[in-house]
Image (tube, rainbow, N blue to C red; front, side):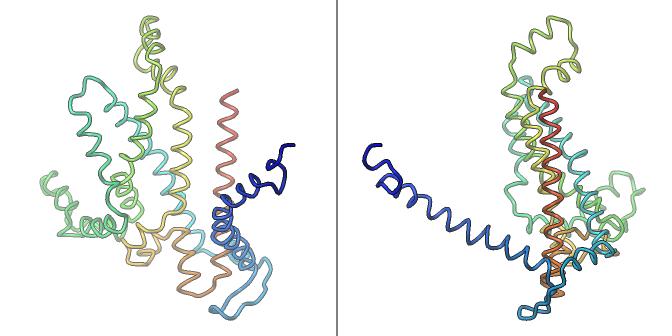
Length: 298
């Protein structure tokens, strides 16, 4: 072994020096909070200075907590809306904007992507004004379009909170996911499409047998990204509903309930338990998706 290459040699020490900042940041901001969260999950806290070991009580209490199940149900509904409404719309937009026959494609791409340039807090404040009764732009526009059939008192933020959140998210994220699909579509082998046309395959057949297999890796990534983001929903409903879950907790999400339990009630142990349940759910969904992807590749 040449000098300087063995363990403890100059090159080995240099590698550790370069790794040290990353390792330090990981220990302080990732490893330590995870361990501390796991410890808190088996404790009940009464403010920052009082802790009591309760074992699995936080998790058993959670199983019988109707507010937690309401938050979980709302979060799942929002996630399903993201997967089955938002992503198909994003793919449809990408297919339309990928057509060479469409003039001004660059302008349309910018228009649909532009909501991403605004912060979620600003979007939430804007949405709260748009979905107001009487003076809100949404009710005013629908009232004018339907010739007065749509009521100006339609209670978006009172009786249809989750539908409102899904609509706002469509405006925010359809263009964002469209960019991923557009990039994937532009890498589809055109010779395969031309060959399928020669063989007499129609538009739907080409899409099913050529385009979908080609964009499947990107599609799987976008699905995973959407699931993780949807299950962690917090800022949008928190600002839109002024820190509450809305009427009858219609807009309460799991992360919002975690925040309320930890920082409003003061029970960081119960909040940590909620966080670990959410983490296990995310890990489980990721494992299932990876299993499906590998099975399809076979």
